[in-house]
Amino acid sequence: MDIKLNDVYRFRYREEMIKGKFEPYWCFDGQLIVTQNKKRELFLVDTYWGFGNSANKCFTLEKALDSGYLTFICNLDDVEEISEDDTKYYDNQDIFNLSCHHGYRKHYYVKKGANKSIANMTKVIEAKIEKEKFEIFWHQKKLKELEDKLKRIELGEAEVYF
Image (cartoon, rainbow, N blue to C red):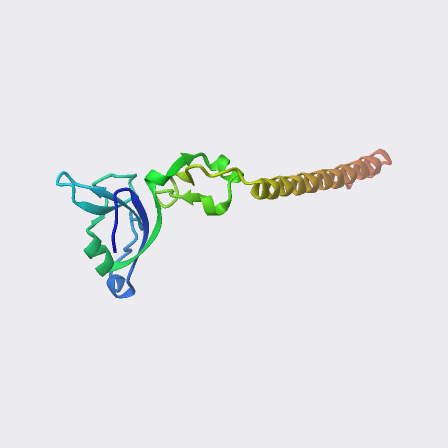
C-alpha cells in the first residue's frame, strides 16, 4: 500500500488489538492524515486534537496496518474547505466530512472543481418547503384551538386551560 502526503484515511483497530484495553478511541478520532517529519518520512497522525498536530497518536504505515484497517477518504490537495451550510449545494459524493474531536470541530471539504448539484439543491429546497408547509399547518391548528378557547371564555366558561 502506498501513501502520500496529505492523504486522509479512516482507521479502525482490529478487534484483537482492542480486547482488554480501556477505551481505545478515547481522545482518538480514527481519522488519520499523512504528514512528514523533518527527515521527510511519511507517517499518519490522528486528527482528534486538530489537523497535523504531532501530539496526537501517530502511526507508521506498518504500525497502522498491523493495528487496524485503513480506508482512503481523500487527499487534502484535491479538496477545498467549505462551510457546513454550503454542503447543501453539492452532491454527497463530492463532499467530505473531515470533522475532528469526535465531530466537535466541524470541517467540510468539497472536491476541487466540483459543480453545484441541481438535484441536491432541489432536494434541499423541497424539504424546506415541506417543513414550512407543516409549520403553517401546525400554526393554523394552534390558532383554531386558541380561537375556540377564546369563544368558550367569552361565553362565560372559566374551566378553559391555555
